[in-house]
Length: 181
Image (cartoon, rainbow, N blue to C red):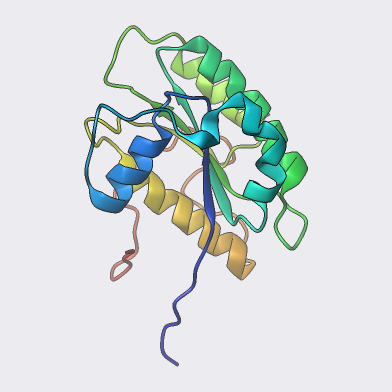
């Protein structure tokens, strides 16, 4: 039996200026532009529309800026909103990665320990340090999310690459011959 193409909806949410548009551009086009204008999805006045935006999502990325503690605090609200509005067909939460973006900048406003604890306490699939600007861990983080999403959609449960909420140490964990995109 040949392989089938499948389409999945992956949400990218978080406060304004955390790098959501840059993440999508980096991953899809391998490009980075430091002069994006704020896009509609992250603005507070559109939060009432999230139920429509979230509908039929298979996975989610919640991003925050490691140099801005308020964006980290808001990640809790984003995760609660997500979990209250979208579930997988079996009733479980969609796989959701927490991306600690702008890890190339300092000082960090939160510690890795705080992020680790937060990720575990709030049911994230795991968390990854990223720098969209430096292209650090972008493809790898998306590979992990795709693996988790594929396992969820096939009913296999979570991927073994990390326990729930753990920091995801990026290394080549793909089985031979596995590829994406």
